[in-house]
Image (cartoon, rainbow, N blue to C red; front, top):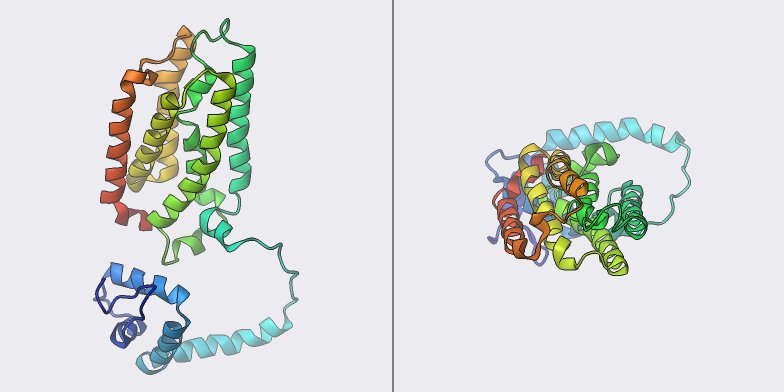
Length: 277
């Protein structure tokens, strides 16, 4: 990053802050993003920005003063709301406010599959364990929920922050995988119906492909489409025949690894597209 760009270990230059205060259209998008991310954590640069706005954009400063003068009487008369229950800052940075029910639901589905495994095979399902069939796409449900506009009441505020886009999407996806994957590991170990190799790489491959396709059609749509395709093309026929799908056999792991790498590469290549989702 150049000397004029903001970082967490140095301060932004006054020229850069002045350009930002004036709303210079020529400023590169990545420069604006870096400066706004820096301003979030640097009180000194925020103070310098306030000074710059007063001198470089007096019209904006006057507008802010007018709005403040109009709001102050209303704010003074407003009823003080009781403080909300304390929530660690990292929780808001990694999870949406309504993700907990979806994570509970996802884990509940794995428990249901565990019960089916214990009660049904081999008479009902043959060698096609329900856990094996749902494990590759189960994380997609939680990943879709983590980036769903309808499930995030603070979506508009989140989307307008400097850190919106791929970094926030990766945080939320990681947080849901950290819950779902250990649950699958434990339940696979309890049933003995599948090894981690059978579903871990497919799960990661589906997740990376959902994020990659999400840069074009939206993460929620991409995850739903992949889950439906898996159910219609792979899971349903395997359930009917009672046999483990060919795509989940050990000799197919290199293919899943290649799809995982391809998805990660596509996410990196299209990393700027996620800020407008």
